[in-house]
Image 1 (cartoon, protein in one colour):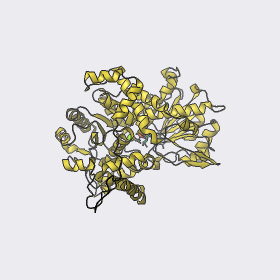
Image 2 (spheres, rainbow, N blue to C red):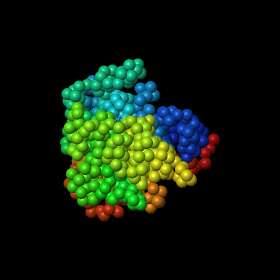
Image 3 (cartoon, helix red, strand yellow):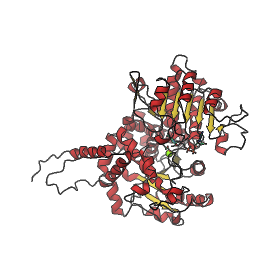
Length: 560
Ligand SMILES: NC(=O)C1=CN([C@@H]2O[C@H](COP(=O)(O)OP(=O)(O)OC[C@H]3O[C@@H](n4cnc5c(N)ncnc54)[C@H](O)[C@@H]3O)[C@@H](O)[C@H]2O)C=CC1
Ligand SMILES: CC(=O)C(=O)O
Ligand SMILES: [Mg+2]
């Protein structure tokens, strides 16, 4: 059964401010002080999951205050509303659930999905949907309908990081069963108590869903999120040229773009170190060859292509590893299709399983983890990478932190401060021999808000590979001098709105060049944007960003 966010009034309550409703205080309510009070209350909560529950309640009660606090305290709040805490929120969603939020579309709605979508109260405002089927939430596996919070969390970042209006966001979870027994046996489980529907059933369901989405929300952009690798590739290929959609995790999309940007900056640091490799000589080893690993590898090839290398030469700089070891042509047991592209042709066996042996064989300058294997990058691995490279590039990108291949403190200690590091989830800075080291966070959150904003403002009919590549270039070039001096490879999170605005500009420009934009915009409006120079377009984008209202102190003395 469909589970829209309650009735129209209920959703409005959770998506619009309930300002000034605290009238039983006989003084005028001081919202600025209340913002401070709320921050204190958050900090009193004991665990990150308690904090998540507190913030989720705040968002329902007082969304303007929630978004104000989120945008003012991004570094503190992002780990709570997004990775890593969102992982625990998803795993426990049926236990912490309080009220309907977002839209759940069940397999039982097949044949009437359009009616269900029609029940969403903000049809005209909807511009961006994050849609998951819960089948691979971060690296935590199949969580079924418990995956809904990932859509909520991603959309909170669209709001805070790119100024998308809250009412324009549409979080969706497709409830098509789960193969995880612990959920099926959980008496509190909120979703369908059945194993996942068959591929054919899923196919029909997805076709009906996407068609209905277009009919009900013609201006909507769809971000697919955390579909299992097979479905991520399959549905992206099926829909990317038919609907306004992209996949945050897979193919040449969000994650690839962010990691390409970070790799670019990391390679600059490594190559400019004494005895560092020539930029053309970087060798990248991907540990993990799922949708994320292969998607990132394909995008990172652009680093070499931009140096003038051919596709074959660029591909030859990349090695991939899965749970069976180094991936090569003719490996016994065969390969899944998505792994064939990077399968090595210059190795013919025997299979090499040990990562240390693979490193000895490849001698990589960069090791990227998208494997979900906690602690896989051991002190021996980091030590060997540091022997091979003056500045080893190591990106343990699996989320959440409980699955990260290498914690930042270990990376710094084991490499004696030499590592150039980015992880998928955040870590604190680390002191080593009197120096402070700051980690990078290689997470698609740096690009999807800007890509979405640009696609929305240009009314782009498609999110194209070129848009995503330009987003990466924009992100790579967004470091300030201070950030570069601090050895960062990604901008500080507090600047995400600036970064998103710049990404939105390049996405709009690309839409203009590819003529994929301005489907719904009046011709005059499209021309006005085209006539703007880049500075003008940037200020146009900034003006379009929604800002949560500043909570204010009372201006009129209160009367008792
Ligand atoms: N930092 C970021 O922005 C992003 C991070 N990710 C993370 O990437 C991870 C992987 O995601 P998917 O590719 O969708 O998952 P997946 O399950 O499709 O892929 C995992 C890959 O790791 C390999 N693997 C598993 N055990 C291994 C072992 N012991 N040794 C070597 N390889 C092993 C598997 O063979 C598979 O190729 C997740 O933790 C996810 O959170 C995904 C998207 C974005
Ligand atoms: C960050 C993200 O999208 C993931 O880990 O799947
Ligand atoms: Mg994801």
